[in-house]
Image 1 (cartoon, rainbow, N blue to C red):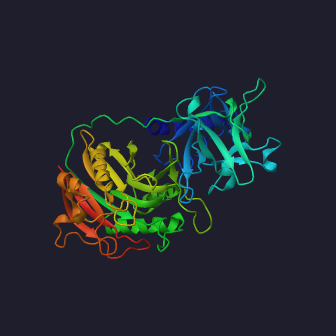
Image 2: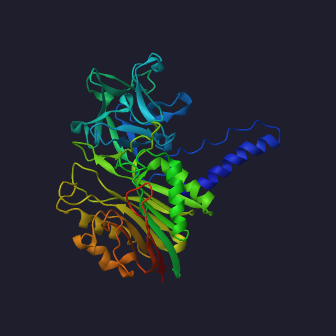
Image 3: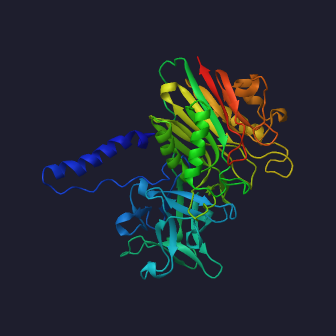
Length: 461
């Protein structure tokens, strides 16, 4: 929240710094660089602290985006996200810079410029061989301490921070064993604090929609390898069918779609929109660390970022937080995403539960009810009225959503034909709220997805 509130001031300062000197005959300063298209994610961020230099690892733009362990205080240039894919499932991870949105590569070719295996954040992705590392716990050196190992089947190298008297802290994958220069502490960046209670809540009607867009997991879906444009157009079309939705919940969504979808909503529906994202994760084996699961590349081979859920809400100073849902070990660690819309006095949460039933992640549905309760608690922010939903991967008869039905009204429950199917012949997509629903609808077709969109109007008193 702090960074979001400061953003308009930073942009204004950049404009003043660029324009006023030119007006008065002085050299203009460079405009602030644009934020990377990964800046819309509420996923966990990390800092790397070198035990050898006692400094944080930075991506140094002035040095070709090289990684150096020589920063005394962490900021955005010292922050990274961890990524894996549906094959590695946490066995290998890739670091991505929050400053420029690029993946870190250990460079062994000509680009290393004589410094074998040096690390630079300059790969658009998807991560390939040079971008994949293993987190190797080093408990003898303290809590949350790891070595970073590069292994391509022919060579194995550990990442070193140059801590010599004349060194510059450069990170290189060059050591054949772990010693003091190869030790790094992984420091989790703290999430923003919850907002203060809102002013007195007033009656409001909110048009909400949820849609599992099938953007990655099912190769039978039209969006399986899609680029952002076709997906954004279908989201907008369904939002219009929903009476120009005010809130849109999206599941099976790729992170780098967030900004294009936001722009499409603003262009085609009008008004200011903010689209945010939270990732599904995998546990890194032998650790308590989780890495974001990446979407497969699009049909042209371009990286689509992490895989998870998204929320589109009106643009204002809104708090966002990812919600880690209790999930079976060794499989996808499911997620929710909550947005606190202060002007509405509303807490809006979207989620995608584990798949339940024989042969699936949660075969006896042990975790799904826990996920429902975690979603309920996440939406229960003091002073704010709840609106929540998504793909719960369970029909009403399973009892999975019982805690939600007990606490809230469900959009389709009182329709003339309640519990209409949303995926195949089953109802597994829901909208719940702390108010009264009307105008509940289910799309007649799935579009390029395998789910039908669900929408309705929630009246909050």
